[in-house]
Length: 355
Length: 279
Image (cartoon, rainbow over all chains, first blue to last red; front, side, top):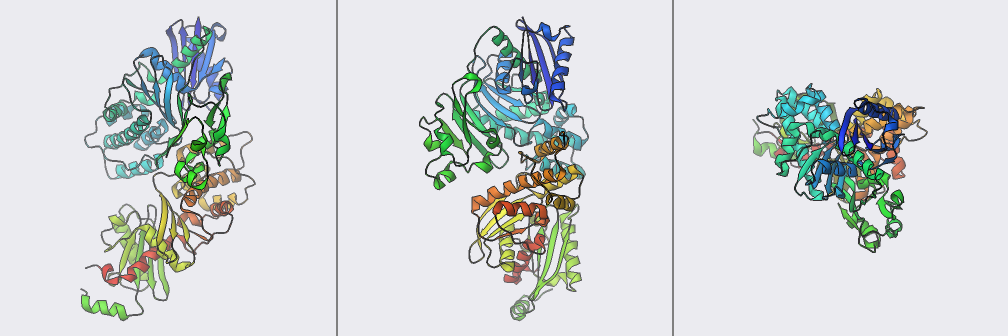
Protein backbone atom coordinates (compact mmCIF):
# COMPACT_ATOMS: atom_id res chain seq x y z
CA UNK A 1 0.00 0.00 0.00
CA UNK A 2 1.41 3.36 -1.04
CA UNK A 3 -0.15 6.59 0.21
CA UNK A 4 0.84 10.25 -0.05
CA UNK A 5 0.23 13.48 1.82
CA UNK A 6 0.67 16.88 0.22
CA UNK A 7 0.82 20.13 2.16
CA UNK A 8 0.44 23.30 0.05
CA UNK A 9 1.49 26.04 2.45
CA UNK A 10 1.53 29.76 1.87
CA UNK A 11 5.26 29.86 1.15
CA UNK A 12 6.36 26.24 0.71
CA UNK A 13 4.76 23.09 -0.68
CA UNK A 14 5.63 19.76 0.92
CA UNK A 15 4.87 16.15 0.01
CA UNK A 16 5.48 12.84 1.78
CA UNK A 17 5.03 9.36 0.31
CA UNK A 18 4.68 6.37 2.62
CA UNK A 19 4.83 2.68 1.89
CA UNK A 20 2.98 0.80 4.64
CA UNK A 21 4.25 2.64 7.70
CA UNK A 22 7.60 3.96 6.47
CA UNK A 23 8.42 7.24 4.73
CA UNK A 24 9.90 6.39 1.33
CA UNK A 25 10.17 9.91 -0.08
CA UNK A 26 9.67 13.52 0.93
CA UNK A 27 10.14 16.87 -0.78
CA UNK A 28 9.95 20.60 -0.08
CA UNK A 29 9.53 23.24 -2.79
CA UNK A 30 8.32 26.80 -3.17
CA UNK A 31 4.64 27.59 -3.55
CA UNK A 32 4.18 29.21 -6.95
CA UNK A 33 1.45 31.60 -8.00
CA UNK A 34 -0.61 28.76 -9.51
CA UNK A 35 -1.75 26.30 -6.87
CA UNK A 36 -2.63 23.48 -9.24
CA UNK A 37 0.75 23.62 -10.96
CA UNK A 38 2.52 23.76 -7.60
CA UNK A 39 0.60 20.66 -6.48
CA UNK A 40 1.66 18.65 -9.55
CA UNK A 41 5.27 19.79 -9.32
CA UNK A 42 5.48 18.88 -5.66
CA UNK A 43 4.01 15.40 -5.97
CA UNK A 44 6.13 14.69 -9.06
CA UNK A 45 9.30 15.71 -7.22
CA UNK A 46 8.37 13.30 -4.43
CA UNK A 47 7.53 10.47 -6.84
CA UNK A 48 10.78 10.86 -8.77
CA UNK A 49 12.95 9.29 -6.06
CA UNK A 50 11.15 5.93 -5.73
CA UNK A 51 10.13 6.07 -9.43
CA UNK A 52 6.37 6.14 -8.92
CA UNK A 53 3.50 7.63 -10.88
CA UNK A 54 0.13 8.87 -9.64
CA UNK A 55 -1.43 5.53 -10.63
CA UNK A 56 0.75 3.68 -8.12
CA UNK A 57 -0.48 5.71 -5.18
CA UNK A 58 -3.52 4.27 -3.47
CA UNK A 59 -4.78 7.32 -1.59
CA UNK A 60 -3.73 10.99 -1.44
CA UNK A 61 -4.75 13.54 1.20
CA UNK A 62 -4.10 17.26 0.75
CA UNK A 63 -3.67 19.84 3.49
CA UNK A 64 -2.48 23.43 3.96
CA UNK A 65 -3.74 26.75 2.56
CA UNK A 66 -3.97 25.45 -0.98
CA UNK A 67 -5.49 22.07 -0.12
CA UNK A 68 -8.75 22.63 -2.03
CA UNK A 69 -6.82 23.15 -5.26
CA UNK A 70 -5.11 19.76 -5.43
CA UNK A 71 -6.92 17.96 -8.28
CA UNK A 72 -5.47 14.49 -7.61
CA UNK A 73 -6.20 14.37 -3.88
CA UNK A 74 -9.05 12.15 -2.72
CA UNK A 75 -9.72 14.28 0.32
CA UNK A 76 -8.52 17.42 2.05
CA UNK A 77 -8.02 17.79 5.78
CA UNK A 78 -7.10 20.87 7.80
CA UNK A 79 -3.40 21.32 8.51
CA UNK A 80 -4.11 21.50 12.24
CA UNK A 81 -5.29 17.88 12.33
CA UNK A 82 -2.39 16.88 10.09
CA UNK A 83 0.29 18.47 12.26
CA UNK A 84 -1.08 16.69 15.32
CA UNK A 85 -1.19 13.36 13.51
CA UNK A 86 2.23 13.84 11.92
CA UNK A 87 4.09 14.63 15.12
CA UNK A 88 2.33 11.73 16.83
CA UNK A 89 4.08 9.40 14.37
CA UNK A 90 7.49 10.70 15.47
CA UNK A 91 6.83 11.35 19.13
CA UNK A 92 3.60 9.93 20.60
CA UNK A 93 4.39 11.70 23.88
CA UNK A 94 3.90 15.19 22.38
CA UNK A 95 0.85 17.03 23.73
CA UNK A 96 1.60 20.64 22.75
CA UNK A 97 2.58 21.73 19.24
CA UNK A 98 3.67 25.16 18.07
CA UNK A 99 3.41 25.31 14.30
CA UNK A 100 5.27 28.28 12.86
CA UNK A 101 4.52 28.64 9.19
CA UNK A 102 5.10 31.14 6.44
CA UNK A 103 2.03 33.26 7.11
CA UNK A 104 0.58 32.04 10.37
CA UNK A 105 1.33 30.58 13.74
CA UNK A 106 -0.73 27.95 15.58
CA UNK A 107 -0.71 26.41 19.01
CA UNK A 108 -2.24 22.93 19.01
CA UNK A 109 -2.99 20.50 21.82
CA UNK A 110 -3.39 16.83 21.03
CA UNK A 111 -3.93 13.54 22.81
CA UNK A 112 -1.94 10.29 22.74
CA UNK A 113 -3.55 9.22 19.46
CA UNK A 114 -2.70 12.50 17.73
CA UNK A 115 -6.28 13.85 17.84
CA UNK A 116 -6.60 17.62 18.20
CA UNK A 117 -8.18 18.59 21.52
CA UNK A 118 -7.75 22.36 21.30
CA UNK A 119 -6.03 24.91 19.13
CA UNK A 120 -5.56 28.62 18.54
CA UNK A 121 -4.38 30.17 15.38
CA UNK A 122 -3.00 33.53 14.44
CA UNK A 123 -3.15 34.27 10.74
CA UNK A 124 -4.24 37.84 11.11
CA UNK A 125 -0.95 39.57 11.78
CA UNK A 126 2.44 38.96 10.16
CA UNK A 127 4.31 39.47 13.43
CA UNK A 128 6.23 36.30 14.21
CA UNK A 129 5.60 34.50 10.94
CA UNK A 130 7.98 33.35 8.25
CA UNK A 131 7.11 36.44 6.23
CA UNK A 132 8.25 38.60 9.12
CA UNK A 133 11.61 36.83 9.25
CA UNK A 134 11.99 37.10 5.48
CA UNK A 135 11.47 40.86 5.67
CA UNK A 136 14.00 41.23 8.46
CA UNK A 137 16.56 39.03 6.72
CA UNK A 138 16.21 41.23 3.67
CA UNK A 139 16.74 44.42 5.69
CA UNK A 140 19.82 42.97 7.37
CA UNK A 141 21.18 41.62 4.10
CA UNK A 142 21.59 38.14 5.57
CA UNK A 143 20.23 34.98 3.90
CA UNK A 144 17.16 33.59 5.64
CA UNK A 145 18.92 30.31 6.36
CA UNK A 146 21.70 32.06 8.29
CA UNK A 147 19.75 34.34 10.61
CA UNK A 148 19.20 31.61 13.20
CA UNK A 149 22.91 30.93 13.66
CA UNK A 150 23.70 34.64 13.58
CA UNK A 151 21.22 35.48 16.35
CA UNK A 152 22.94 32.95 18.64
CA UNK A 153 26.12 35.07 18.47
CA UNK A 154 24.35 37.97 20.13
CA UNK A 155 26.01 39.44 23.22
CA UNK A 156 23.58 42.19 24.07
CA UNK A 157 20.14 41.68 22.55
CA UNK A 158 18.14 44.85 22.10
CA UNK A 159 14.49 45.15 23.12
CA UNK A 160 11.85 45.60 20.47
CA UNK A 161 8.69 47.41 21.52
CA UNK A 162 6.63 46.02 18.68
CA UNK A 163 5.78 42.79 16.94
CA UNK A 164 4.30 44.58 13.94
CA UNK A 165 6.40 43.55 10.94
CA UNK A 166 6.21 47.03 9.39
CA UNK A 167 7.21 48.86 12.58
CA UNK A 168 9.89 46.27 13.44
CA UNK A 169 11.38 46.74 10.00
CA UNK A 170 11.75 50.49 10.43
CA UNK A 171 13.07 49.99 13.97
CA UNK A 172 15.63 47.49 12.66
CA UNK A 173 16.74 49.94 9.97
CA UNK A 174 17.19 52.65 12.59
CA UNK A 175 19.25 50.33 14.82
CA UNK A 176 21.41 49.28 11.87
CA UNK A 177 22.08 52.93 11.10
CA UNK A 178 23.18 53.47 14.67
CA UNK A 179 25.67 50.65 14.33
CA UNK A 180 23.93 47.96 16.41
CA UNK A 181 25.22 44.47 15.58
CA UNK A 182 22.93 42.40 13.35
CA UNK A 183 23.07 39.49 15.78
CA UNK A 184 21.76 41.74 18.57
CA UNK A 185 18.87 42.95 16.41
CA UNK A 186 17.95 39.37 15.54
CA UNK A 187 18.16 38.26 19.16
CA UNK A 188 15.80 41.10 20.11
CA UNK A 189 13.30 40.06 17.46
CA UNK A 190 13.48 36.41 18.48
CA UNK A 191 12.75 37.50 22.03
CA UNK A 192 9.70 39.55 20.94
CA UNK A 193 8.37 36.70 18.81
CA UNK A 194 8.94 34.15 21.59
CA UNK A 195 6.83 36.19 24.01
CA UNK A 196 4.08 36.21 21.45
CA UNK A 197 4.31 32.45 20.87
CA UNK A 198 4.23 31.86 24.60
CA UNK A 199 0.97 33.82 24.84
CA UNK A 200 -0.49 31.78 22.01
CA UNK A 201 0.58 28.56 23.74
CA UNK A 202 -0.89 29.69 27.06
CA UNK A 203 -4.27 29.93 25.34
CA UNK A 204 -4.29 26.17 24.89
CA UNK A 205 -2.30 25.57 28.14
CA UNK A 206 1.11 23.99 27.79
CA UNK A 207 1.63 20.32 28.62
CA UNK A 208 4.72 18.12 28.22
CA UNK A 209 6.03 17.10 25.71
CA UNK A 210 6.40 20.15 23.57
CA UNK A 211 7.40 20.43 19.93
CA UNK A 212 7.82 23.06 17.24
CA UNK A 213 6.91 22.32 13.63
CA UNK A 214 6.91 24.33 10.41
CA UNK A 215 9.71 26.04 8.56
CA UNK A 216 10.73 28.33 11.42
CA UNK A 217 11.54 25.30 13.59
CA UNK A 218 14.70 25.06 11.48
CA UNK A 219 15.85 28.42 12.83
CA UNK A 220 18.04 27.43 15.78
CA UNK A 221 18.08 30.91 17.28
CA UNK A 222 14.30 31.08 17.37
CA UNK A 223 13.98 27.55 18.80
CA UNK A 224 16.46 28.37 21.56
CA UNK A 225 14.65 31.58 22.42
CA UNK A 226 11.22 29.90 22.51
CA UNK A 227 12.39 26.97 24.62
CA UNK A 228 13.86 29.44 27.12
CA UNK A 229 10.54 31.27 27.34
CA UNK A 230 8.39 28.14 27.50
CA UNK A 231 10.76 26.43 29.91
CA UNK A 232 10.59 23.13 28.02
CA UNK A 233 13.09 21.61 25.63
CA UNK A 234 11.18 20.91 22.39
CA UNK A 235 11.28 17.44 20.84
CA UNK A 236 12.15 18.37 17.27
CA UNK A 237 11.39 16.09 14.37
CA UNK A 238 14.15 15.27 11.90
CA UNK A 239 12.54 17.65 9.40
CA UNK A 240 9.93 19.78 11.19
CA UNK A 241 8.75 21.32 7.93
CA UNK A 242 7.23 18.12 6.48
CA UNK A 243 5.13 17.23 9.56
CA UNK A 244 1.93 18.56 7.98
CA UNK A 245 2.45 16.49 4.81
CA UNK A 246 3.38 13.47 6.91
CA UNK A 247 0.16 13.83 8.90
CA UNK A 248 -1.77 13.99 5.64
CA UNK A 249 -0.08 10.78 4.48
CA UNK A 250 -1.00 9.07 7.75
CA UNK A 251 -4.61 10.19 7.28
CA UNK A 252 -4.45 8.79 3.76
CA UNK A 253 -3.36 5.42 5.15
CA UNK A 254 -6.14 5.43 7.73
CA UNK A 255 -8.72 6.33 5.12
CA UNK A 256 -7.45 3.64 2.78
CA UNK A 257 -7.74 1.10 5.56
CA UNK A 258 -11.28 2.38 6.18
CA UNK A 259 -10.80 3.93 9.60
CA UNK A 260 -13.10 6.82 10.52
CA UNK A 261 -11.60 9.54 12.62
CA UNK A 262 -13.05 11.65 15.36
CA UNK A 263 -11.92 15.25 15.47
CA UNK A 264 -13.82 16.94 18.23
CA UNK A 265 -12.88 19.21 21.06
CA UNK A 266 -12.75 22.93 21.49
CA UNK A 267 -12.41 25.24 18.53
CA UNK A 268 -11.13 28.74 18.98
CA UNK A 269 -11.85 31.31 16.33
CA UNK A 270 -10.03 34.60 16.36
CA UNK A 271 -6.55 35.98 16.65
CA UNK A 272 -4.06 38.00 18.59
CA UNK A 273 -3.03 41.06 16.61
CA UNK A 274 -0.78 43.04 18.89
CA UNK A 275 -3.67 45.03 20.37
CA UNK A 276 -4.92 42.04 22.32
CA UNK A 277 -6.55 38.62 22.19
CA UNK A 278 -9.88 38.18 20.44
CA UNK A 279 -11.24 34.65 20.52
CA UNK A 280 -14.62 32.97 20.36
CA UNK A 281 -14.35 29.42 21.67
CA UNK A 282 -16.93 26.80 20.74
CA UNK A 283 -16.92 23.54 22.69
CA UNK A 284 -17.86 21.04 20.02
CA UNK A 285 -18.66 18.33 22.55
CA UNK A 286 -21.34 20.54 24.06
CA UNK A 287 -22.62 22.20 20.89
CA UNK A 288 -25.62 20.40 19.44
CA UNK A 289 -26.01 22.66 16.40
CA UNK A 290 -29.33 24.14 17.58
CA UNK A 291 -28.60 27.50 15.92
CA UNK A 292 -29.63 29.75 18.81
CA UNK A 293 -26.34 31.66 18.54
CA UNK A 294 -26.93 32.32 14.83
CA UNK A 295 -30.17 34.19 15.51
CA UNK A 296 -28.89 35.83 18.72
CA UNK A 297 -25.80 37.47 17.22
CA UNK A 298 -26.58 40.99 15.93
CA UNK A 299 -23.53 40.88 13.66
CA UNK A 300 -24.15 37.47 11.99
CA UNK A 301 -20.92 35.99 13.26
CA UNK A 302 -22.14 32.37 13.52
CA UNK A 303 -23.29 29.69 11.16
CA UNK A 304 -24.25 26.06 11.66
CA UNK A 305 -22.59 23.68 9.24
CA UNK A 306 -22.33 19.91 8.99
CA UNK A 307 -18.70 19.24 8.00
CA UNK A 308 -17.99 16.10 5.97
CA UNK A 309 -21.38 14.61 6.71
CA UNK A 310 -20.94 14.77 10.46
CA UNK A 311 -23.35 16.18 13.02
CA UNK A 312 -24.04 19.90 12.41
CA UNK A 313 -22.07 22.24 14.70
CA UNK A 314 -21.86 25.98 15.15
CA UNK A 315 -18.83 27.79 13.85
CA UNK A 316 -17.70 31.33 13.18
CA UNK A 317 -18.20 32.59 9.63
CA UNK A 318 -14.81 32.73 7.89
CA UNK A 319 -15.17 36.40 6.88
CA UNK A 320 -16.04 37.37 10.45
CA UNK A 321 -13.22 35.33 11.99
CA UNK A 322 -10.56 37.39 10.24
CA UNK A 323 -12.11 40.70 11.36
CA UNK A 324 -13.37 39.58 14.73
CA UNK A 325 -12.29 42.59 16.78
CA UNK A 326 -13.97 44.89 14.27
CA UNK A 327 -17.17 42.90 13.73
CA UNK A 328 -17.85 41.62 17.25
CA UNK A 329 -17.78 44.07 20.18
CA UNK A 330 -16.95 41.35 22.73
CA UNK A 331 -19.21 39.82 25.33
CA UNK A 332 -19.55 42.69 27.82
CA UNK A 333 -20.05 45.50 25.28
CA UNK A 334 -22.47 43.35 23.32
CA UNK A 335 -24.59 42.36 26.32
CA UNK A 336 -24.85 45.98 27.44
CA UNK A 337 -26.40 46.86 24.08
CA UNK A 338 -28.50 43.77 23.38
CA UNK A 339 -30.70 41.67 25.58
CA UNK A 340 -29.24 38.42 24.36
CA UNK A 341 -25.99 37.49 22.69
CA UNK A 342 -24.28 34.28 21.65
CA UNK A 343 -23.11 33.33 25.11
CA UNK A 344 -26.42 33.92 26.88
CA UNK A 345 -28.43 32.38 24.05
CA UNK A 346 -26.54 29.09 23.94
CA UNK A 347 -28.63 26.49 25.83
CA UNK A 348 -25.71 24.14 26.33
CA UNK A 349 -23.05 26.69 27.38
CA UNK A 350 -20.77 25.82 24.51
CA UNK A 351 -19.65 29.38 23.66
CA UNK A 352 -17.14 31.51 25.50
CA UNK A 353 -15.38 34.74 24.57
CA UNK A 354 -11.85 35.91 25.32
CA UNK A 355 -11.55 39.66 24.83
CA UNK B 1 18.78 85.74 31.30
CA UNK B 2 15.20 86.37 32.18
CA UNK B 3 14.18 88.17 35.26
CA UNK B 4 11.40 85.95 36.57
CA UNK B 5 9.30 88.30 38.64
CA UNK B 6 9.21 91.02 36.02
CA UNK B 7 8.79 88.70 33.07
CA UNK B 8 5.85 87.01 34.75
CA UNK B 9 3.93 90.22 35.28
CA UNK B 10 4.83 91.37 31.79
CA UNK B 11 3.14 88.24 30.36
CA UNK B 12 0.04 88.77 32.33
CA UNK B 13 -0.43 92.30 31.10
CA UNK B 14 0.96 91.85 27.61
CA UNK B 15 -2.01 91.22 25.38
CA UNK B 16 0.26 90.34 22.47
CA UNK B 17 1.65 87.26 24.11
CA UNK B 18 3.12 84.76 21.70
CA UNK B 19 3.67 81.05 22.32
CA UNK B 20 5.20 78.04 20.60
CA UNK B 21 3.83 74.53 20.19
CA UNK B 22 5.67 71.59 18.70
CA UNK B 23 4.32 68.15 17.83
CA UNK B 24 7.06 65.60 17.27
CA UNK B 25 5.46 62.81 15.30
CA UNK B 26 7.02 59.63 14.01
CA UNK B 27 7.25 60.89 10.43
CA UNK B 28 7.02 64.69 10.69
CA UNK B 29 7.67 67.49 13.13
CA UNK B 30 4.99 70.16 13.24
CA UNK B 31 5.57 73.56 14.86
CA UNK B 32 3.30 76.55 15.34
CA UNK B 33 3.84 80.13 16.53
CA UNK B 34 0.66 81.43 18.08
CA UNK B 35 -0.13 85.07 18.76
CA UNK B 36 -3.20 86.67 20.30
CA UNK B 37 -4.69 87.36 16.93
CA UNK B 38 -4.08 83.93 15.47
CA UNK B 39 -1.41 81.69 14.02
CA UNK B 40 1.74 83.60 13.08
CA UNK B 41 3.57 80.75 11.41
CA UNK B 42 3.61 77.01 10.91
CA UNK B 43 6.25 74.53 9.83
CA UNK B 44 6.13 70.84 8.89
CA UNK B 45 9.18 68.73 8.19
CA UNK B 46 10.87 65.37 8.82
CA UNK B 47 12.88 64.95 12.04
CA UNK B 48 15.96 63.54 10.31
CA UNK B 49 18.32 61.26 12.20
CA UNK B 50 18.37 63.20 15.43
CA UNK B 51 15.09 64.44 16.90
CA UNK B 52 16.85 66.97 19.11
CA UNK B 53 18.54 68.67 16.16
CA UNK B 54 15.57 68.36 13.80
CA UNK B 55 13.05 69.76 16.27
CA UNK B 56 15.35 72.58 17.29
CA UNK B 57 15.95 73.70 13.71
CA UNK B 58 12.21 73.50 12.97
CA UNK B 59 11.53 75.82 15.91
CA UNK B 60 14.26 78.21 14.81
CA UNK B 61 12.79 78.24 11.32
CA UNK B 62 9.23 79.11 12.34
CA UNK B 63 10.26 81.73 14.90
CA UNK B 64 12.66 83.48 12.55
CA UNK B 65 10.00 83.49 9.83
CA UNK B 66 7.65 85.20 12.28
CA UNK B 67 10.46 87.62 13.21
CA UNK B 68 10.68 86.41 16.79
CA UNK B 69 13.36 85.16 19.12
CA UNK B 70 13.04 81.47 20.06
CA UNK B 71 14.40 81.91 23.59
CA UNK B 72 11.79 84.39 24.72
CA UNK B 73 8.73 82.30 23.83
CA UNK B 74 6.99 79.78 26.09
CA UNK B 75 7.19 76.32 24.49
CA UNK B 76 5.30 73.08 24.93
CA UNK B 77 6.11 69.80 23.19
CA UNK B 78 3.84 66.86 22.41
CA UNK B 79 3.85 63.76 20.21
CA UNK B 80 5.65 60.41 20.38
CA UNK B 81 9.08 62.02 20.17
CA UNK B 82 8.46 64.73 22.77
CA UNK B 83 10.37 62.93 25.50
CA UNK B 84 13.45 62.77 23.27
CA UNK B 85 13.44 66.54 22.91
CA UNK B 86 15.19 67.72 26.05
CA UNK B 87 15.15 71.33 24.85
CA UNK B 88 11.41 71.59 25.61
CA UNK B 89 10.70 72.73 29.17
CA UNK B 90 7.27 71.05 29.32
CA UNK B 91 5.39 68.25 27.62
CA UNK B 92 1.78 67.19 27.39
CA UNK B 93 0.04 64.09 26.03
CA UNK B 94 -0.98 64.28 22.40
CA UNK B 95 -4.63 63.63 23.27
CA UNK B 96 -4.77 66.68 25.55
CA UNK B 97 -3.17 68.92 22.94
CA UNK B 98 -5.46 67.64 20.20
CA UNK B 99 -8.54 68.31 22.32
CA UNK B 100 -7.36 71.85 22.99
CA UNK B 101 -6.53 72.53 19.35
CA UNK B 102 -9.92 71.27 18.18
CA UNK B 103 -11.70 73.26 20.85
CA UNK B 104 -10.02 76.35 19.44
CA UNK B 105 -10.93 75.62 15.80
CA UNK B 106 -14.36 74.03 16.26
CA UNK B 107 -15.78 74.83 19.70
CA UNK B 108 -18.93 72.73 19.22
CA UNK B 109 -17.30 69.49 18.06
CA UNK B 110 -17.13 66.55 20.48
CA UNK B 111 -15.37 63.85 18.45
CA UNK B 112 -12.06 63.95 16.60
CA UNK B 113 -10.19 61.33 14.62
CA UNK B 114 -6.44 61.87 14.46
CA UNK B 115 -4.85 59.79 11.74
CA UNK B 116 -1.08 59.86 12.01
CA UNK B 117 1.78 58.01 10.41
CA UNK B 118 2.19 55.32 13.06
CA UNK B 119 -0.90 55.73 15.19
CA UNK B 120 -4.60 56.48 15.04
CA UNK B 121 -6.39 58.15 17.93
CA UNK B 122 -10.08 58.84 18.39
CA UNK B 123 -10.82 61.37 21.11
CA UNK B 124 -14.06 62.46 22.67
CA UNK B 125 -14.40 65.84 24.39
CA UNK B 126 -16.91 67.07 26.94
CA UNK B 127 -18.77 70.38 26.59
CA UNK B 128 -15.81 72.21 28.18
CA UNK B 129 -13.55 70.87 25.44
CA UNK B 130 -11.65 68.63 27.84
CA UNK B 131 -10.78 65.05 27.08
CA UNK B 132 -13.62 62.69 28.06
CA UNK B 133 -12.62 59.41 26.42
CA UNK B 134 -10.27 58.13 23.78
CA UNK B 135 -9.22 55.06 21.85
CA UNK B 136 -5.69 54.73 20.60
CA UNK B 137 -4.09 52.30 18.20
CA UNK B 138 -0.31 52.43 17.90
CA UNK B 139 0.63 48.77 18.25
CA UNK B 140 0.84 47.95 14.58
CA UNK B 141 0.79 49.51 11.14
CA UNK B 142 -2.78 48.52 10.26
CA UNK B 143 -4.99 51.56 9.75
CA UNK B 144 -2.13 54.08 9.88
CA UNK B 145 -0.41 56.41 7.45
CA UNK B 146 2.52 54.02 7.18
CA UNK B 147 0.12 51.37 5.88
CA UNK B 148 -1.05 53.77 3.16
CA UNK B 149 2.53 54.66 2.30
CA UNK B 150 3.44 51.00 1.98
CA UNK B 151 0.47 50.45 -0.33
CA UNK B 152 1.37 53.49 -2.45
CA UNK B 153 4.86 52.07 -2.89
CA UNK B 154 3.36 48.73 -3.89
CA UNK B 155 0.99 50.28 -6.41
CA UNK B 156 3.79 52.50 -7.71
CA UNK B 157 1.66 55.63 -7.35
CA UNK B 158 2.18 58.83 -5.37
CA UNK B 159 -0.17 59.19 -2.39
CA UNK B 160 -2.18 62.10 -3.80
CA UNK B 161 -2.66 60.41 -7.16
CA UNK B 162 -3.97 57.34 -5.36
CA UNK B 163 -6.47 59.47 -3.49
CA UNK B 164 -7.69 61.00 -6.75
CA UNK B 165 -8.08 57.58 -8.40
CA UNK B 166 -10.08 56.16 -5.51
CA UNK B 167 -12.73 58.85 -6.01
CA UNK B 168 -13.39 57.36 -9.46
CA UNK B 169 -13.80 53.83 -8.14
CA UNK B 170 -16.96 51.98 -9.14
CA UNK B 171 -16.52 49.23 -6.58
CA UNK B 172 -14.30 48.16 -3.70
CA UNK B 173 -11.88 45.29 -3.99
CA UNK B 174 -12.14 43.09 -0.94
CA UNK B 175 -9.06 43.42 1.27
CA UNK B 176 -9.84 41.27 4.30
CA UNK B 177 -6.50 41.59 6.11
CA UNK B 178 -5.83 44.63 8.21
CA UNK B 179 -2.19 43.57 8.64
CA UNK B 180 -0.03 45.64 6.29
CA UNK B 181 2.07 42.67 5.26
CA UNK B 182 -0.85 40.37 4.48
CA UNK B 183 -2.86 43.14 2.81
CA UNK B 184 0.11 43.56 0.51
CA UNK B 185 -0.25 39.97 -0.74
CA UNK B 186 -3.99 40.50 -1.21
CA UNK B 187 -3.31 43.61 -3.28
CA UNK B 188 -0.77 41.71 -5.38
CA UNK B 189 -3.30 38.96 -6.04
CA UNK B 190 -5.85 41.57 -7.14
CA UNK B 191 -3.30 43.06 -9.55
CA UNK B 192 -2.45 39.66 -11.04
CA UNK B 193 -6.02 38.42 -11.24
CA UNK B 194 -7.38 37.65 -14.69
CA UNK B 195 -8.88 40.07 -15.59
CA UNK B 196 -7.08 42.33 -13.09
CA UNK B 197 -9.21 44.25 -10.59
CA UNK B 198 -9.33 47.94 -11.67
CA UNK B 199 -6.70 50.03 -9.90
CA UNK B 200 -9.35 52.42 -8.60
CA UNK B 201 -11.26 49.58 -6.94
CA UNK B 202 -8.12 48.17 -5.33
CA UNK B 203 -7.29 51.58 -3.87
CA UNK B 204 -10.86 52.03 -2.62
CA UNK B 205 -10.55 48.58 -1.01
CA UNK B 206 -7.29 49.57 0.69
CA UNK B 207 -8.88 52.75 2.03
CA UNK B 208 -11.92 50.85 3.19
CA UNK B 209 -9.73 48.48 5.21
CA UNK B 210 -8.18 51.49 6.98
CA UNK B 211 -11.59 53.11 7.48
CA UNK B 212 -13.13 49.96 8.95
CA UNK B 213 -10.35 49.91 11.52
CA UNK B 214 -11.01 53.58 12.37
CA UNK B 215 -14.79 53.03 12.50
CA UNK B 216 -14.42 50.27 15.07
CA UNK B 217 -12.49 52.71 17.28
CA UNK B 218 -15.15 55.40 16.77
CA UNK B 219 -17.86 52.95 17.77
CA UNK B 220 -15.93 52.12 20.91
CA UNK B 221 -16.00 55.72 22.15
CA UNK B 222 -19.39 56.51 20.54
CA UNK B 223 -20.05 58.44 17.34
CA UNK B 224 -21.22 62.07 17.60
CA UNK B 225 -23.08 64.35 15.18
CA UNK B 226 -19.99 66.31 14.24
CA UNK B 227 -16.59 64.80 13.60
CA UNK B 228 -13.26 66.49 12.91
CA UNK B 229 -10.44 64.67 11.16
CA UNK B 230 -6.83 65.65 11.82
CA UNK B 231 -3.34 64.30 11.13
CA UNK B 232 -1.55 63.75 7.85
CA UNK B 233 -3.95 61.06 6.63
CA UNK B 234 -6.80 63.59 6.83
CA UNK B 235 -5.26 65.22 3.73
CA UNK B 236 -6.23 62.12 1.77
CA UNK B 237 -9.50 63.03 0.01
CA UNK B 238 -10.18 59.49 -1.13
CA UNK B 239 -9.93 58.02 2.33
CA UNK B 240 -11.91 60.83 3.91
CA UNK B 241 -14.73 60.38 1.40
CA UNK B 242 -14.97 56.66 2.26
CA UNK B 243 -14.93 57.57 5.94
CA UNK B 244 -17.81 59.99 5.28
CA UNK B 245 -19.72 57.24 3.47
CA UNK B 246 -19.32 54.94 6.45
CA UNK B 247 -20.23 57.62 8.99
CA UNK B 248 -23.17 58.76 6.86
CA UNK B 249 -22.31 62.47 7.03
CA UNK B 250 -19.61 64.98 6.07
CA UNK B 251 -16.65 65.44 8.39
CA UNK B 252 -14.98 68.74 9.26
CA UNK B 253 -11.40 69.16 8.13
CA UNK B 254 -9.11 71.99 9.26
CA UNK B 255 -7.08 73.79 6.61
CA UNK B 256 -3.88 72.31 8.03
CA UNK B 257 -4.99 69.07 9.68
CA UNK B 258 -1.43 68.07 10.54
CA UNK B 259 -0.77 71.00 12.86
CA UNK B 260 -3.81 70.73 15.16
CA UNK B 261 -1.91 69.04 18.00
CA UNK B 262 0.89 71.61 17.71
CA UNK B 263 -1.73 74.35 17.86
CA UNK B 264 -3.19 72.82 21.02
CA UNK B 265 0.32 72.64 22.48
CA UNK B 266 0.85 76.36 21.77
CA UNK B 267 -2.48 77.20 23.43
CA UNK B 268 -1.60 75.20 26.54
CA UNK B 269 1.84 76.86 26.61
CA UNK B 270 0.04 80.20 26.85
CA UNK B 271 -1.99 79.09 29.86
CA UNK B 272 1.08 78.72 32.04
CA UNK B 273 3.75 80.78 30.29
CA UNK B 274 6.23 80.78 33.17
CA UNK B 275 6.53 76.98 32.89
CA UNK B 276 7.27 77.19 29.20
CA UNK B 277 10.42 79.28 29.40
CA UNK B 278 13.78 77.54 29.52
CA UNK B 279 15.83 78.49 32.54
